[in-house]
Image (tube, rainbow, N blue to C red):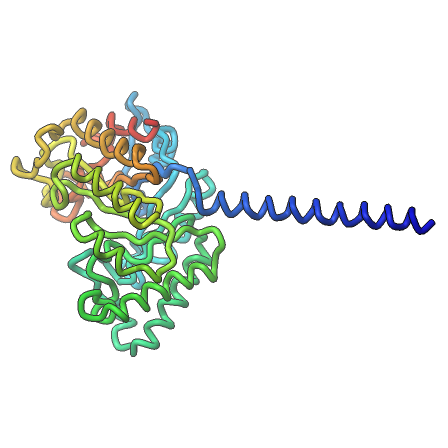
Length: 365
């Protein structure tokens, strides 16, 4: 009798041990999935598509048939949509409510959501990191509290797959408090507050730190040794950044290896023409704007450039994706508009709002 009880006890303990090993194995595999994600983000920034819809802008496939922009992008291989979010913008554009509503639609159509949180009421970039007006008079301790609460709300209510803590924060963000050159300790504290808010609100959302270009990226990321983030994001526009793609490729790969992080091109674009389709000044307008002779401002040149950029990411060991900025920015306000698109010659649609050959880059492997 005693012998039978001992056999049963041994059998029971073996089962418990086996279950524990299985559980540990599952935890390890889940952790590997989270931190060694091989998913490749084929992304476009569509922050102004809700505005274009209000202006009744329509798009066409290669057969000139009317199609929804999201349908065209999904068919082309786009799997992720990037959206900016502003604190208290003057209009509904990029507001919390608009981004939340649009994100819900995008997710229902199968897209992943990538949010770039500007922590400002309008554009934030290396030269402009203005505090939201409502936060302007806050003491630093209260600003930290605002960043925490605001970031948690975004993650809790929108559930992004990727979130950027700031946009192109080469020089810092939330000026003057978060100026990396004059208030580096406060910059790190603000950045860490945003990061920690994400970690507390989500176990799966990946955190990106985003800078423009590679010129100071090595120094910048060297300052973030105590910051907990997952992804490095780099804006790459030949007009402003490295004009040699071989040099860009070397530095891009080196950055990922040095800091042991997955890396993405967070923004890029290229013109398919130097012509204009409205009267709004174009960012890449005029003959002097073309700065890469091997990639002319033609439909094939735009495609060739994007193929090269994507191949750089694919060939980088920890390259995880790229995002085309301004995909939707056709001349939405009419041909005579002085306040229309400054990007219509760099969109993914031609001057008739028909898909361009560059769309093929998203299915490229």
